[in-house]
Image 1 (spheres, helix red, strand yellow):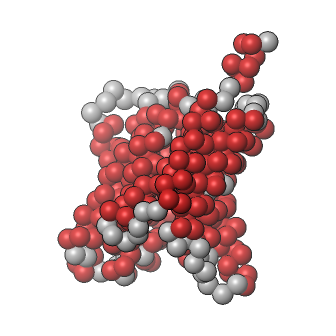
Image 2: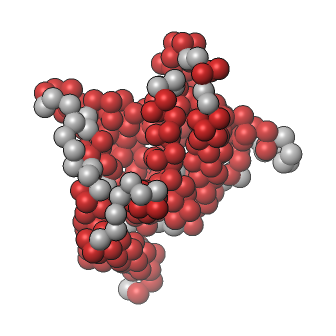
Length: 296
């Protein structure tokens, strides 16, 4: 989960290279991510022993695809277009909190003091990093579109947290490749009607080599590899713990910005990073339901 979120943290500045060129829209980038990952997962599956998936499990994988990919990425992209980047960054810090609450509701995982303190520490650290890096910039005009954008970004966090919780046990039934190839196939089918016009209107020959390499990173690492790693983490970790690693993303983005000379390091940022890792440690060390029942 740490590696997956570190890769996603790198994706933000790298994807900006493509966006700034204006050749491809955010929706096209999302479609390329899903289509590219789908091809790669199916290609890898050709070199593995065929695995039969029961029809009812294919239906469950469709729901998993909606939560983890379609609603998560789709809601986030449309939400960011309607609200400010600062608001979007701040709202993304709510995901571990959703994971904790949903795990308590659906999996009966206890809400312990360590979990609450850990999530609070991590959220404070992430907010300090975002605000300290200029993420508090105001977005569009206040109005209904701004509120709708915030709601859509929040929905993206809720859908991903719901996926981590509801499919915690299901993902152990099949191999990583089988799960991912079906999830990305369903996601591509769902997204294509919305992105078809943008895909047809894109001037692909206008992309320079830097943009092409950036897109390759987004597809191969920030989608194919990172989603594989997420399922590994999802199989091994409780949903709240898996969700806490979401806070690694602003840390990586901040480090990259400092290395590239786009930002500077100070005591506040150092304190923010410490808070985030203390938060992750506290949630990781909190007792699960099985551990608490074993003590009784």
